[in-house]
Structure formats: C-alpha cells, structure tokens
Length: 167
Image (cartoon, rainbow, N blue to C red; front, side, top):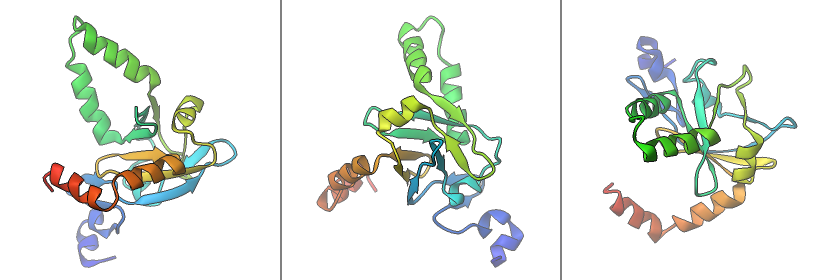
C-alpha cells in the first residue's frame, strides 16, 4: 500500500477508480459479457467503493442506453423529487414516468447486477455490454450503440464538445 494509502485507505485505490475526500469517480470503459441469467459484472474498481447493500438506480436513457445512478446521485435525485409539490401535475407526471421505468439494485458478492428484461431490451443488450464512466455515474451501452457514440464525439468533434463544456 502506498504511503497515502496507509494513512487513508481511499488513497490506496488505483485508476480507473479514483476517490478523494469521500467522492467516488466513475472513469474508464469496460467491456463485459452478460451471463446466462442476464447478469452483468460491475468493474471491480467501481464496486469496491461501495458496500454490497448500497442501492443504485438504473433507468432507460432516451438515447438508447441505460444510465446508472450510484448511491450518492440517488440521494441528490431523492432530494429533488422530495421537493416536488403534490399539486405540480407536470412534476408528478415526470416522477411517475421516470420511476415506473427505473430499477433499483445492489450487486451480489461476485459484483454482478441483474437488470430487468425491459432495461436490457431498451439498450439492445443481449450478450455484450460496454460500461462507460461519466465521473459521477456510469452508463451501459450495447457495443454498436457505443461505437456510434464514439464516432459522434471523435476527433474535432471532441474538441468542440470540450469548448462547449468550457473545459
């Protein structure tokens, strides 16, 4: 264990997982295979930041992949939803639609998650999956869909995206 890891276990972790002062960062790209029961193994670098009983949310993203919110992001979402007024029809309609499609999960001792048939179908996942970190959360893509996303943001387009994000 490195010198800082001996002082604080958080610093003993190595990329692609990075954690500082209680923050978990989801970085990297991982290609995994669904098992015969349709379970997907989370990258060990991501799951080691969480206790097995922690709950994640998986929701179909309109762009054809599965967006996964880890516990910290679930708390942020919970606070937003809790603040919605019961009399706000649009907010209530959104919440009903969003959460009717969303699945909560935790991972088993082997780091596997089971996603619903609806989520797998939405993302076009049959056997292979690409897990992509987005710093505060991660997404699960069908390999062909991820290839399209890479092409869309490649080369000069990536530079344009960085400028638009002011990075």
